[in-house]
Image (cartoon, rainbow, N blue to C red; front, side):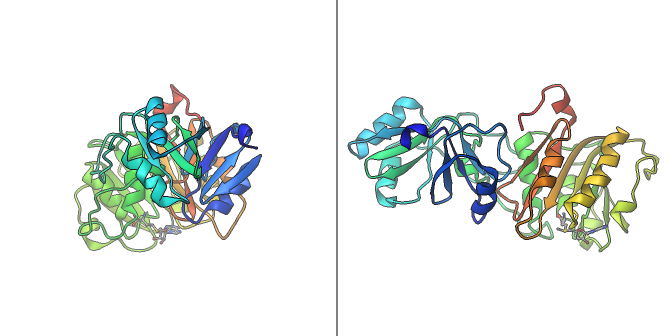
Length: 315
Ligand SMILES: C[S@@+](CC[C@H](N)C(=O)[O-])C[C@H]1O[C@@H](n2cnc3c(N)ncnc32)[C@H](O)[C@@H]1O
């Protein structure tokens, strides 16, 4: 079986079942790491990190393991699912890689980061080419525990950090399903104008921020061509609406087809185990991507950017 390992995928904590449903050719599971005998056509939605070129490396000792990893590249992060002490001793012999929590905004780590794990005492599995620049796909931020009204801002921070594009002064954003206001807080702090829409009120401090205009009501009643504040188009549409993905899809497609909005970041919230037919429908919208953010729970994030029209994304 070992010779057949072609790729490995790390599931987010608690979402192994979702990832397993997406994968063909599963060979074995090691904690949250799932090994397969094929290269999938597209990145799985529920993978927190994809190991693209895993190889099995026999090792004779801790220092032999470290030597073999260092011969492949400098930076490695350990996914430890067993033999924790031995794995830790190997990791300690590798060059130190500093991964302090990020401030916001922050640039992405510049150097490639490989991932490895111990499959048994004498064998490690290592991949120098991984989809995430962060150890095990975990994007940690220096949290602001005072100003935002909830922790939802972390998923928007993560999404914007991954795409390295930020709404800015002079841009107009619509943030639907915005209450109590974590996302509107992020957008106003970046200097953008935000039309913030929810059936529930915003946190008072967010409502008073410069650039935030709150409208109470049903987001689905907002139609292209009826933009408020004499706006002709929208730079960014954000949705964290608690709603069925089907309903969001129909509404969002109206905006996509109108051509009035450049960029979209929307959370797709799933009930129970659901099937992910809708995730694929979103992913099939041109120039877009669906992924599970580290700061997402039982939800995926769909993003579509104007800049991806000239450099198509790999979904
Ligand atoms: C997860 S919360 C949003 C959290 C928000 N993004 C933040 O950062 O604070 C989901 C919101 O969707 C709102 N919502 C659900 N359906 C809605 C609709 N049809 N129109 C407007 N708001 C809606 C709910 O009132 C709720 O406040």
